[in-house]
Amino acid sequence: MQLISVILGWVLRLLTLVGVVAVILFFLLLDFMSRSDPYEGSGQLPRSAVVFTGDFDRIRKGIELLSSGSVDQLFITGVNGDAGLNVARFSRQFELSPDQAEWVANGRIILAPDAHSTLENARETICWLDHQANIKAVTLVTSRRHMARASVALQHGISPISVVRVVSDSTDEYDKLQLDLVEYGKFVATWFITLLPGDLWPGNEPALCWGS
Image (cartoon, rainbow, N blue to C red; front, side, top):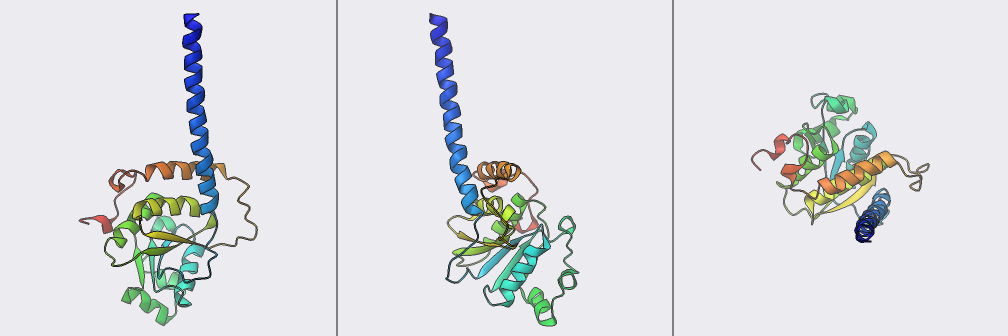
């Protein structure tokens, strides 16, 4: 009888643990799905926009926002060979007009070259924001599939600065109820990793963070 009681005790503890994990994963799933939704507000976007590289459409969307006056400055993180980009050739790669090319020279477009992953994108952005004054919110531009993971990494790193999400790709055929288990798994890992201090996040420290 004593052995049965011990076994039952362990089973109850295991079931409790499984239940807690299931509840956590369920609430993270709701967060994942809600973060995949684009911004649909009627008000103005935050005037500082951030683009996480990985797809040229993300950068084109950021340039579009800047050209239309929807934002005042554009910080593009991860402008390097891994993303198919080159700082020196950036204006030619995106066929910027002479006036648009001036935005790179005068700082309206900031090209940051060191990030090679979503976590490094977030860290590079965090370190850039550390040197900006009076920014209470930023516009994050990335693809819809990537938005949940990118926004949670950035939000955890810059809170209480808020993040407004703008997706770079068409949402017409996107069904958030068709769960992407790979991306959801990456989101869950990112959610917990970014609760740690930035110095403990995996990846290299971008140059913008040196001495900050």
